[in-house]
Image 1: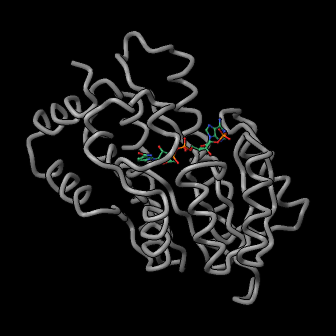
Image 2: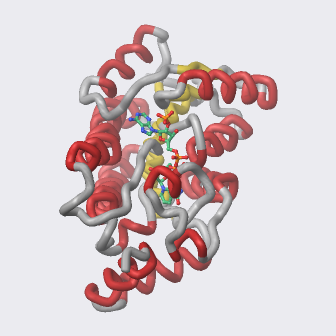
Image 3: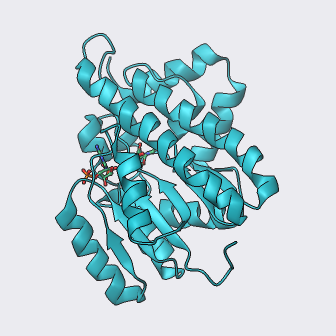
Length: 263
Ligand SMILES: NC(=O)c1ccc[n+]([C@@H]2O[C@H](COP(=O)([O-])OP(=O)(O)OC[C@H]3O[C@@H](n4cnc5c(N)ncnc54)[C@H](OP(=O)(O)O)[C@@H]3O)[C@@H](O)[C@H]2O)c1
């Protein structure tokens, strides 16, 4: 059985930019040692060096492509070999794509599901049993306000985030009696590389104001440490999520479609 003195190793996926990099800085500032993963190793090494210097916590880097079905198991094995017991898993890596479902490249759509859904589910399944056994730690899953309604012109992305929110809420209730927290962080438009990758830079959604990744990360870690099931950073985003809950579904999905700006 682990003791509370054991290091609270925090594994962060998608730590090479945006919200993931800021989550890394935020957890490190609160004394959590880190394992950083993403594909761009050099960026992870640079961030690791900066964090070690600024916060004096150990930082390990493990570069991987999480679209590969074997990657979560490989990562789990690498952690075991290095004797790292993960206290907190942050499933942050993800991307979106704007366009018509019928014309976006199908391999990209499947890769999005592999990353946003399959890798997140596999890492959670690999790490949650140990957390429950040790009765400590938890999982912070980065969903989105996209999780609260369907999203025309970003259909697959919205569906992946609805999955992340639903899974996280269910796991929150399953894990809570064992002293383990599972939190879904649901940001709205946020400054990062996301809008470029998704082709959303000129959309209403991103032109109507973005939050900083630093603020999103701070609110996310606060909510996770407070044991909350769902965290929505920013008053505007909270109003949007509540609106989507109470408006007729055809209204909320039409608004999402308009904000994506395909017509
Ligand atoms: N920004 C927003 O407006 C917004 C809003 C709501 C939710 N989110 C969610 O926030 C999370 C973080 O996104 P972000 O905004 O910070 O975007 P970002 O700056 O594009 O960061 C995405 C991260 O995911 C990593 N990643 C992408 N493909 C990967 C792969 N195949 N294997 C491993 N890592 C991979 C990227 O690193 P490499 O390229 O180095 O692999 C990068 O570190 C995502 O889940 C996104 O859906 C973002």
